[in-house]
Length: 321
Ligand code: NAD
Image (cartoon, rainbow, N blue to C red; front, side, top):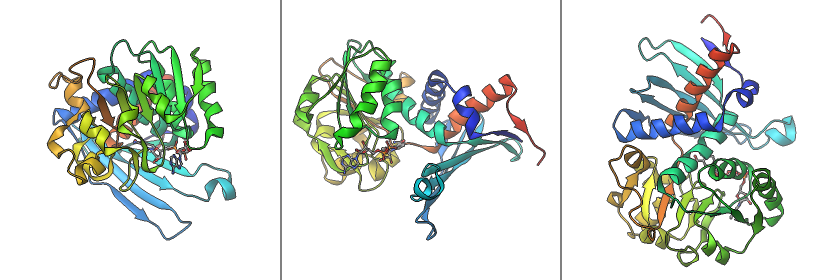
């Protein structure tokens, strides 16, 4: 079995490799070649931790495994390590033997950023020039970096509930040579692409605050009860997702579906667009919205890619099991 420790990931994994891995696995899911197993998530009753497993099998890429991990709220304060902790385990689908154990913390950030980037590549207007960011936490910087590579953006505008966090986004935008401006939510109307990545439990962005032709990647809602946009926006938009079953139960679409504004049948997969089985955006005026809920197969895809890179560079640790 190979081990790729967390501290090796930053030097090995690129945004490009994460993008390719996530795009390929979304395509495989839509083609019925890959499926996610039911998610397990448990409150441990120890250290206030939430722990769980997200697994799946991709027959086309022959990737089998799971991500085990969760959230330990006291880690940073008491132990000086980050609160989100995860590890990916890959297995040989021919034998069931363990193939690799891979640090999953940075990979989670990269695969989540890749998902919204894939949606922008396939659904945003080609002439998109203004990128709007809602959210400025840990994950927002990764989303911004990956999004900026998808179109010739000339400006980033950002809003966050806690405005003191916005300089973190500004630094990323300026690092990519793009000016940044903090705005009010009404000014999101100027954005051609909007990425939302917050831990909000109530709608932030109203349906009227979005201009025709905008592409939105709603990435923060990954749990029942979380919400980032007015459900009326989903009724105005063509809605896409990574996995429909997750979108309607714990993604941004949960609210629009529960209130009857849209039905499950109104949600398409991004994979179908990648495969050419769905037209995606149909006009320059259409609003497209990607509900990125986050699936285990994304984790497995980026972990498999990083194992290949680690073997190539001779840094994978081999152990007998
Ligand atoms: P973080 O704690 O670093 O940042 C949280 C962000 O949400 C900050 O911008 C904060 O100002 C904002 N926020 C907090 N409370 C808010 C509220 N009540 N209303 C509006 N904004 C609020 O977290 P993060 O790591 O950046 O993750 C952000 C979200 O993305 C979380 O909900 C997380 O679960 C989710 N996430 C989703 C995926 C996926 O695959 N879809 C993957 C990773 C994280």
